[in-house]
Image (cartoon, rainbow, N blue to C red; front, top):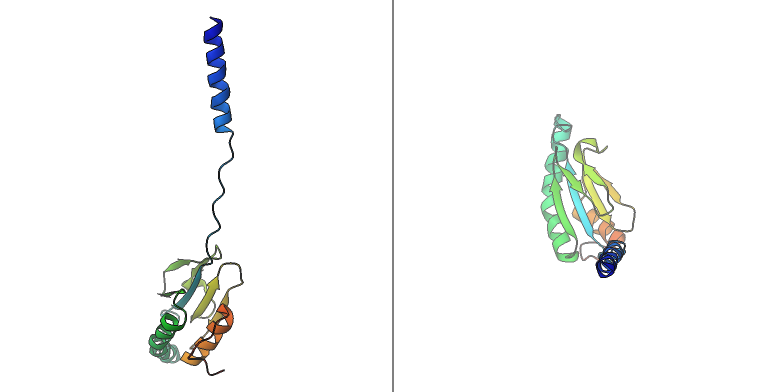
Length: 142
């Protein structure tokens, strides 16, 4: 009987200490970088807004090429109305609630995000992204 009591006590003590162990900390994640091109076509439903949206889409192609070439480790997303994007700074970007109806959001972990409002030319975007991500861009004339 004493042996049974001793075995039960040892099992109970080892079970409790097994549960009381601290969980292992996750390794710090590498810095995530993302560029989000956003537009809300329902708020741009007037002649002036449609012209801005057309210009935005025109420059978007060259901006995507610049981002791919000069910032290869930066994720590039294009989102429209009704889409929600989870950002690396643990916030969300909802196109419907963004104050400018179109623009770009530059986000990376550990820094405050930067919003480029309105239509951006390829050199405007390249210079802003180069300054934000602290890199050089061949499309930036500076």
